[in-house]
Length: 97
Image (cartoon, rainbow, N blue to C red; front, side):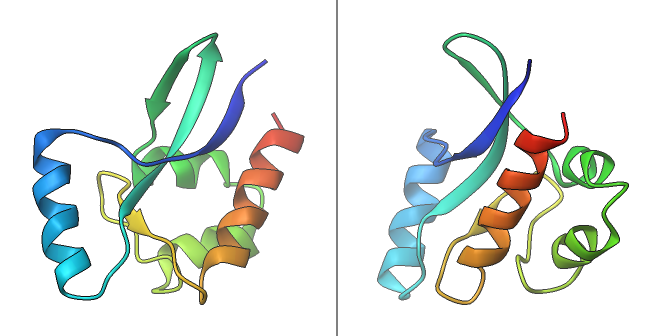
């Protein structure tokens, strides 16, 4: 069974990206992940997330709109305006796998 969630990816590029965004008042960058085997989380791209949400137009619309504002590589930011939407997506993915 695949487990889904979000995580803060930490590469040197992301560290510099986060420093700039924290300075500018933004939050840290996060990604959705799929965990198919213990201890291994794989970041999902925007295309992969949309494929997983294919049967739920409402959640798919959140990813396509500026509500989550996800890059093509899957990077997004969490703030008060989209936290509930992200929780709904993670719950849906874990319940419908």
